[in-house]
Image (cartoon, rainbow, N blue to C red; front, side, top):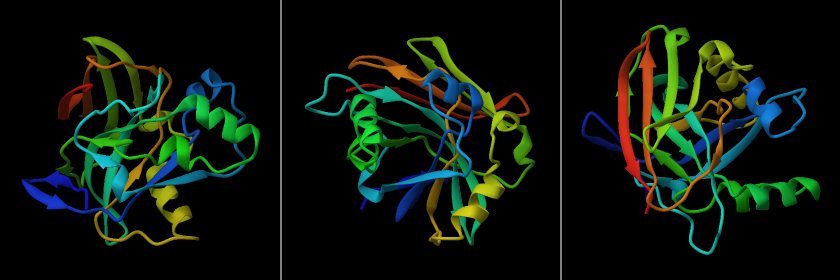
Length: 204
């Protein structure tokens, strides 16, 4: 099974629970409608990676940076930087046909994570930044989320259970786009403007 790391300890999530369309500006940039209720999708354990690997057999793939949370006893216990990799062209075709998104969202290595750090502070002070080749591409924070993580957990529990060690990805701010092999990503999670997580990935 695939794993994440926290304090040099390996954690094996059973799944990654993701929420879509959780930042207004991101909804606008993709010309989507604001949903009436939370939009969920799941990435399996096989999607988890600590390396940024361009999907083989595809010409295009999009990055989506997300504040990601480790869930234990149904509560947030740690935070990390995550990338939800998306085969956008395939996703668009599936959406038009009203079909599930797994082919575009749940493929191997599509959930890329930094190391996680324990977190029990004020969640409202969290923010995220993504730099690609030293240029700032995405920036967002708790205040911009339509649905807050605590509410997402509660709503998710209405139809599924979080196992200890599962991950919640809380949506992506505007600025998503395509990337290529050789690009260098630096992801940061900040608490009250102080960097608490920083990790660099080179696309292979």
